[in-house]
Image (tube, rainbow, N blue to C red; front, side):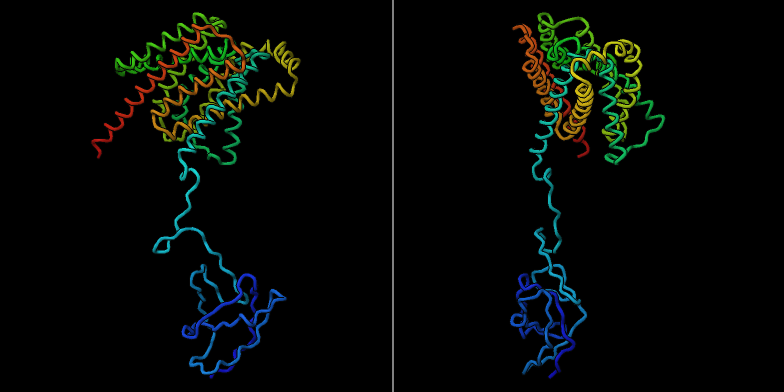
Length: 421
């Protein structure tokens, strides 16, 4: 029989966490320790000392410590022999038959439809808030060139802060890429400024009704500028758009030529922006591309704002706005319209990257319906019956056009993948 084991064994075992440990005699080996602790655990202290273990009568095997780690079935990680026993933590992650733990899925992987719906909601919400707040600013500060600069300036500042913290990491730009993005930025600046001139001159709903003609300009540019053959079905689907916008314009109570022509120029500018964007396709991610376009567009928007509105701003604009709403509200309104403008464009990009072309088309149409409807309710704009009918016809035409075009793009994609498979 082996003598008793010395010295004393000190173990910081909490009685409430590990009341007893058992090893059957049949499982005792030289690599294990017989633990009989149930009758020896003290209840008054969390750090106890065991007296030397007595000899075990009729034990065929001598007890000794092993330097190998002790494993207890059902527990992980390994309990190591030290001055104290570290209690293991049971992991809740599921493991396969080989013991490999599968990583837990995040919220987006478990509920993709719910996450996409949230993106759509934020896209519409930010767009509606931007349009409403933007129009309210024009009611007491009718300087669209300067406001356009503020939109881009706040967005550029936001992008610079994101680059500074590495979300996202700034992509490098060279001379060739700068030359590719400059035409896109010029068209973006022109379309943005002209949209704001129209918003300041007429009702928000009317500007968006005119901007419903943008698909018509896109189709015309694709066929007559790029040389792409547009199917007859697409041209026919655009007829209701043209008719609806014409009906709405004839009886629009807020109609004036500055608002109408500015919105039409905006349509042309955004059409050419799409054309140049296709020529400037790069490996850079969309967030960095939009940031560089915003910076270049800002540089092009500043000179017209200074030349056209500069003298009036210094003499009347700032003083009049501060007298009407106060300095704090004036500054915060300018900041928030710039922030909402940038955020809704960014969220729109993130949303459209998550969905198919057909969903994209439907989403774009519904967004315009939401903006027109909310603007009428918030500002109480009176519209004639003919204007309402014309707007509805135009939106319906845009929906039909978008659905046909999305189906055509999907068929082209499947045809391109067919030979590869």
